Length: 102
Length: 195
Image 1 (cartoon, each protein chain N blue to C red):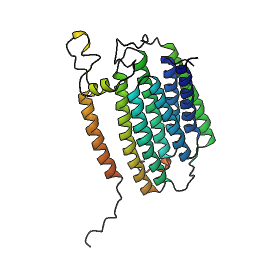
Image 2: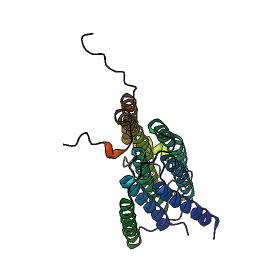
Image 3: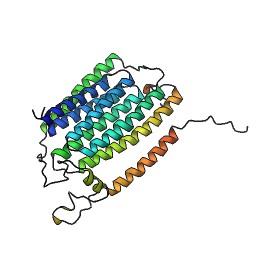
Image 4: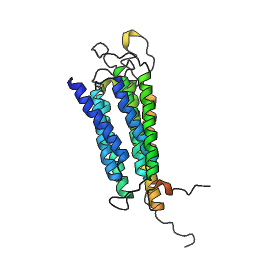
């Protein structure tokens, strides 16, 4: 497999689809978080590939840095929410979160 | 097969296979392990694409920081060492079919689009992202100066730096961390009123 724009995009696509499936099927709250991380990584691969193989310049790398920082922030908040959820429900199963159902 | 292509193939396959293993693993500890492998080989792909600073940041922040957070979450929320919250077989089949369909659509889109011309990295267009050594251009961009866009061939600066988003992101990170520690603090049971 030759390294090129299309090869990087294919890797990013695989990461993205795996993340989406992970988000949709996992019932563990931490597993859903891991799916989000995979999706963000797929986007990062695309940014870096466009920065490398087109005349986009450094903008792609800058945006991937922003994505990395925001993913760290998102993981911190989501983990705090997951801990609170566990303290209240004594489980991390997201299907049990039906308190807000009307 | 050149060395770059060989390394790219190895790390691309490692990334995809371990991302698939994250989806297929049942216990959350194994998912965390495969996620470490996937993110680490993604960082290797970044290094191969001449994005050295982004790769280093990926290793430090993602693999070193976010994954540690996730593992702490696994430890603090697991009721047993190998807790399984499984999905039913029908859901798994439907998810697999939908995933394959989605992957096919994305692959068809990637193959069907005429992307912009690839550029070959040369010493002339330094700091375009196609050549390595991106640390100084990235730092200058975050300070609001674009050495590749603004200072090229005597044009007036177009103010295309990223100073304001950088400040917003840093304040956002501070707010988020304060909020997270507020959300996750150990709650003491409130004493009833009147005692």
